[in-house]
Amino acid sequence: MILHSEPTVIIIGGGPAGLSAAHQCLALKMRPVVFEMGDKVGGISRTESYKDYLFDIGGHRFFTRMAHIDQLWWEMMGEDFITVARQSRIYYRGRFYDYPLKLTNAFFNLGIVESARILLSYLRAQISPQLPEENFEQWVANRFGWRLYRTFFKTYTEKVWGMDCDQIQADWAAQRIKGLSLKSAVINAMFGGGKVKSLIDSFQYPLKGPGMMWERFRDHIEAHGGEVRLNSRVTRLGHDQVRITSLTRSEGEGEETMPVEQLISSIPISRLVKILDPAPPAPVLAAADNLSYRSFLIVVLIVNRKDLFPDQWIYIHSPEVRVGRIQNFENWSAAMVPAGETGSIGMEYFCDIGDATWRMADRDLIEMAAGELAELGLAEKEEVVDGTVIRQPMAYPVYDRGYSANLAVIRAYLEGFVNLQSVGRNGMHRYNNMDHSMQSGILAAENIRGGEYDLWQINEEDSYLEEEQLPIPKSPLIEKLLRQSFARVDEFAFAAASGTLAGLLIFLATGWLVVKGGDNLGQHLQLIGQYFIGYTVTVEGAFIAFTYAFFSAFLFAWTGAYLRNLFLTLYLYVLKKKNEMMSLRDLIDHL
Image 1 (cartoon, rainbow, N blue to C red):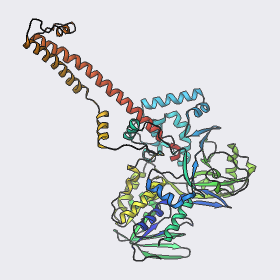
Image 2 (cartoon, one colour):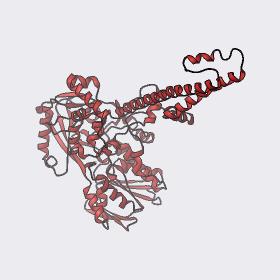
Image 3 (cartoon, helix red, strand yellow):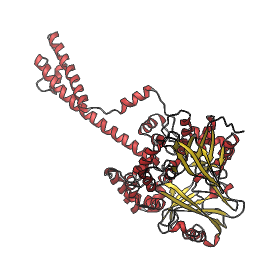
Image 4 (cartoon, helix red, strand yellow):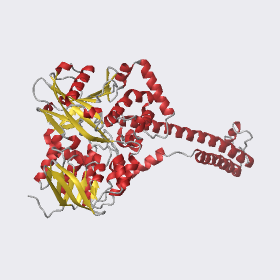
């Protein structure tokens, strides 16, 4: 079945990026061989199980603005790709807040005084933002105000990342939260007319969890001549400074070394550097050591009650408990929970490998999670009848102060290998969404066949937002109209032109009447003398009229142009802020 005459592409990592690369290799008549160190495909997007209970490692919604990715998902899942009506809330200080935040709900929960303080804080941030924006704290506070930032974002963000918000770089937020461009907002305002349809309220989801998607990818790859080898850990990559020449992997008790033609890696880029043989220069290894990752673990509690709460997940902002997010798996899909009167709840704890939370015994974690579930008022502790723990190392790449410089050193070194590409979230140390990770794998496969795609630009150039764009008319005429309509008018030039035109008109009119002559010389035009002191229908009067008309029209036109520019600036500012707030509605989802 396998056609050995086809070029072979070795892919390290069986997550969304690696499997998408393998799928594209098949389309390009190349034979992919995928090595995955775990016993399941999907990476952090896999589905785990415990006593017939299925659960995510973090909760994965499927939505994208990339039509080819969406089509690929549907081709794989068919009728098993269900639509889920989203419901999620924030728990803070004993109250539940709708999320995305809704004005009336937040107002009644916060109260009049606190709401007023938040509004004043927001206005102050708009008038006097903190610049330059160097860290995440400044980035959020400049958009929401310091008081709302401290209320809804600070505690949860620091739970997730284990560091102060002023230690997280602002470009992390700029990359993760992308809005519509100002141009798109203007065109939608001019031609769309209606409300942008939002995908925030619903999303697609595989019937039995996200792992079902990646199992379909694996089956497709294997059915068409590729290989997916589980429990295969790559331990060494031999090279000659220009090409990766060999790969050594362990599988069970054995070890195998094979030649490499082309290699795509989706493992953490820091680990990729460390399995190169010969070893990279010391500065590259040091940069790899200095890249940080955030891990987390999920405590799955089996609760002797269904319908504990209606949300798919709840963000826990209260600092008195350690849990950061709580999943209710039956609300993602009824097929995730066996029939009966029990449900499964996922308590998510963000941590670092080797810290106190990571090292806790499973029974202690289950006891702690059950206690916190009760403390939050979501269930009685006695209702928890069973549980299990899954630890996920290196789940999220960290954007600390030194990450950019360290990543640049590693990238510069790896770019010296002509047959190596690094893709995916950990492979690029970028907090990509699932579809962007898939896109990086697809384009890496295209590059092998002669494409010239810069994988590092995927999430830089593509705006990303949980929004379905309105159809935007595109034509040279519309582009020209936009440029003309929203171009700034030069007040002085417009005023000078208007004054000159007005002055010349009355000058020429007066001059024509003087030349024409007659008994009743310019009877009507002489009425201007009531406004232009000293004007007569004479040669001298023509120059006087020119001067009056010029300065009057100049002043009027300058004022009009100034007001036009001012109101246009305010209009564009309102559009920009509206567009920005639309893109920030689900900010916490991206943390």
